[in-house]
Image (cartoon, rainbow, N blue to C red; front, side, top):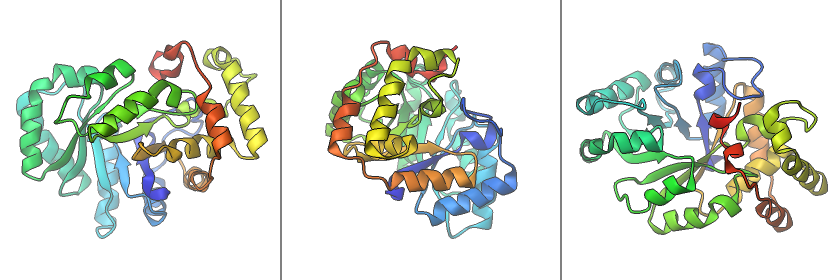
Length: 289
């Protein structure tokens, strides 16, 4: 199952997540973490120019571990000048010490639309072997639906988790797969929300309190951790190709890898799929106050 995991690197360059209490890890810790990830069977990194010095840290790792390189997914800035696209891709390749980018992504659907005329250039870079896939990171089902007939977009990254679940995304995920798209999901832990106590005064916790109680009941009945339930639920989906996880320490990575080995059963899957959050804005961390 570890080969289905993608290691997110936003924590390498930024303090990220509502449960992050230690900030960014040091360079030496990142390099050690990447070694552990690779040795555990994880082969893909998800990064972005916007993630602080994450590109540089990945490049430092690849220089030290030239025979054990990761496939790279990275994202352009939200706005990029059309004539700078190739130079930017070459810059990324050089900085991360790789010969090709597995996926170059638009950081958001809005970025995709505003930079739509760059698709031709990106497809040319694909023909040159500098990139393998073009992707878009989305938030909403409306955005997902808009990508169904975009043939040059071969990878779609979307939120998917215990609350932003199959009842919300399932139909469109199936349609995207029918179109031959590669599906990557993020936000498996909803930025750490699932690990918050339901007594926490954080407004988003209180807004989703009823649903978080339901998830706690499921873990208790299944005799598993919330981490195991959350990761296993995503990994179990046949039409999801890869699941992005974000960690800020080796111990957290090892805990995720252990959790990914858990096999969620059909009873738990049905219970999770029956959870319906009416206000989907509550599942979008960028809208949290």
